[in-house]
Length: 339
Image (cartoon, rainbow, N blue to C red):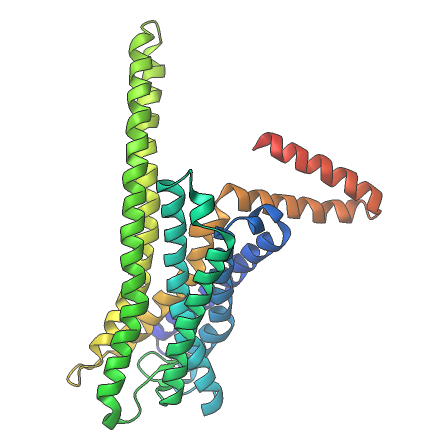
């Protein structure tokens, strides 16, 4: 292994550790919090975290071994299975992010009719479609033997083994990325830009009311006015920052890999191995960033983590069930008052 490969290997190890721990925390929050389970976005977040965990424990180690050994990490059967999962999980995660953006669009643009437009059953239907969509392409790739070890990416992934099937493989790859990456990116851009438009409109209304109030309060101290104006600017920037993170992280993590996979379909294009591995690692980094972007930094999940940690601590300090129940009830009441 040269120095670049050592850095990439360490990068994968760090991503795998962060991804596994953070996504497990998301699943624990979903299991332990009835409030999160009752909400529709929890279904999409759980599906996304489940896919990220499988990517972390199956595909990341496969790529790591491929980089270290510089050859196929497993036997043919196991490598085909890993490649099948890679195709399935990549598409599923993209569609899960698109589903989350649709949910937030409905919640912001149609707040009064959200409960009727986005029901629990509707969320399950969307998750079922993402699984069916991903499973269809994975099975097609497996049936046509378009799976195996790809030296450029040091991974078990989609791979053309016979030149006679290049046209079919090209059509399959283009359709796969168009209905997974491009479709998800289009949905993310349309929904989140509409969300940003509504958020800015509400911020503008709040700013007008605030400024009118400040003009009426002639005796107010100048420092208070400055703080109000500064808060207005932060409120505007906060909405733009969140939308930029959602769309920007999706493009940065997936676009280089998708463009590279489409470019290699041309017979005269030769992809550099280091670039191929780098783009593969970018897609892995999305699995580590998703829990923080979509769940762990939100108040509900932080509350669920604090409540779970306190319950474990109380069990260690007070083994008897009677003490636990009373203390847990008091703790939950205090958390509700604080939030």
